[in-house]
Figure 1 (cartoon, rainbow, N blue to C red):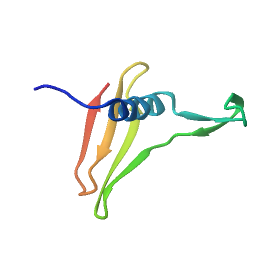
Figure 2 (figure 1 turned 135 degrees about the vertical axis):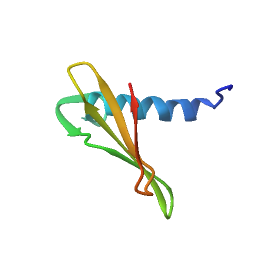
Figure 3 (figure 1 turned 90 degrees about the vertical axis):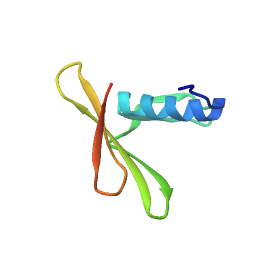
Length: 83
């Protein structure tokens, strides 16, 4: 199976994993410099596929260094991916 995608699609995946791994989104000033004292905690990421379908991504720490991403496709079925 060959993976493909443009830069925008790959950057969306990177941002998703980066936000889930750090759990924080920092604010910036008018010059786009990070404000270290102001951040928004990331509890979960919800992606709307269409009107009836959405994905929810949540990172859960099983132990100190074992993580998994729990996600739901909006149909009630939940799955997880070890990372």
